[in-house]
Length: 250
Image (cartoon, rainbow, N blue to C red):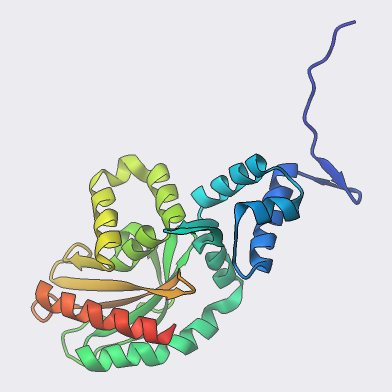
């Protein structure tokens, strides 16, 4: 009698059809969350009731997608930027806007330029808030607008500091973007902030810094203004001030 090839079937659970790999991936994320957002491989595997090799393979996939991450000198897996992005979409925008509004105002008063708050939204940047400059020559509010991640200094911050997001975008649009953006992202990751010197618009200079909570990038603070008022040296000074204020606000 001819033997039929075996076919892997999804789990049957409480009358519902579940895909085993997806159920396991969600279970691992929930375990990490119960451990306060970080857990070691052995802990995760033991609580999930699966082998370390299986758990490791699932976590590596989640890491590549940006849903978990590793930190230098730390063996634990941490919830990543992808999870925070989903939480933002679920309705945390208002709280983030209220918390960081005073920081935007401080930066605007100190620099006299237009300042933005933005978050990642899928593969786009979404602008949550803005404090406009009082100068006659200025950039205007972008609150509520969306733009491609690779189109701004703020987008470069997300691509540099949310590695899963950066890898996914580069894999999907590598040919269209070209090799130069890889160097840009690497420069932002090394420097700690992103610069846009008339790349977005002639005569306009922009800068963006990450806002982190528990080590994970939640949002970005951006500033833009005429190039004549914001030479490169001035932008570098402002960047350090913005990063200090972002740390205070966390």
